[in-house]
Image 1 (tube, rainbow, N blue to C red):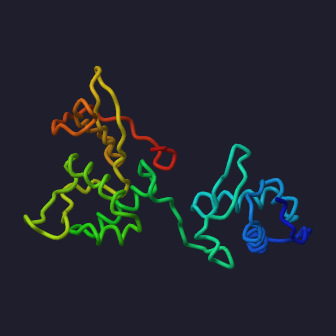
Image 2 (spheres, one colour):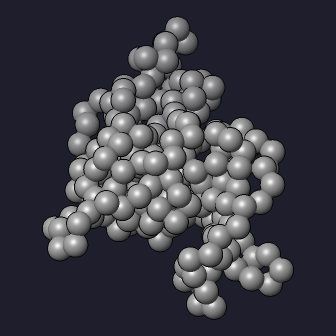
Image 3 (cartoon, rainbow, N blue to C red):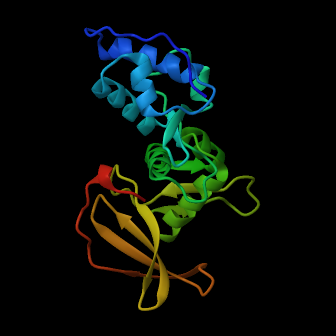
Length: 222
């Protein structure tokens, strides 16, 4: 479905003016729209359009749909009549925790220092399942300690290893035919390998490996 929107051909338009027009186009469209159609409809230069769209996509305000890579506003972003400046919308409920969610959780952990799960979920703007998966890995890696007494209503933790601002990344690897959870600390370049059982469940054993070369924080995909 093609969106109908007045074409703007102001050659002296600034990026600030373009943002409002582009946002209105995306809010008007009921169906996903191609980037080319956004450029043609807005009348702004491709450089300005792609710069705005790239920023919004990075913040999670827009999402790509289908093989044609059409775009549309996130359902939450549609609530805003104009493009928000500091709002980040990240998908929840995914099977694996996105890196930006892990970063939010880690930042909240470092700020709170001692916390219960509901407090962490609220501070990191995530959900309990997502937070608990990452927190469990941090406990196994020695970054956190669970301190709630038996029978407590909520799990309680405290940070015991605060190595820096960048969140430890978590992934699964196979070494010598055995599965491990690998935690990479991008603040110290250290790696921890936590052995998994035959069904991919934690077995409780761990071994340290040699420090890995530091990788650029914003270039990682985990």
